[in-house]
Length: 94
Image (cartoon, rainbow, N blue to C red; front, side, top):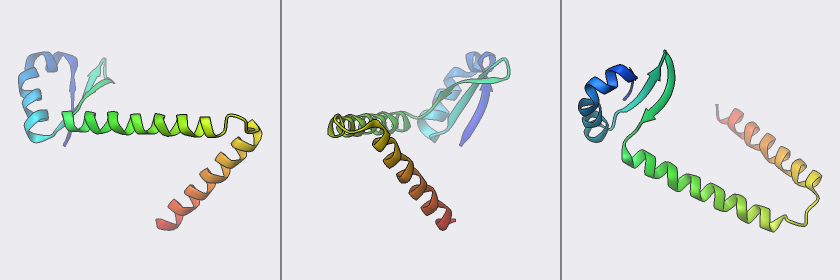
């Protein structure tokens, strides 16, 4: 469950918030002056995010290496076509 708290309440209830995150798998959006400033998530969520991010940047590096001699305009056109295809597929699924 995602919950929202402010930084003042977080200071007063940090132990409770940590228990809810660790044991209930809740997430907390921490607000400062009424605006979201940070998020506390379970460690598994953070670890999954890190792995996904690493895979993404590895894929970007492989693509850049494979296309280092490619014409930038052709690469951009390929990206735009792929983007349109994915959007069309998502629209059909809905």
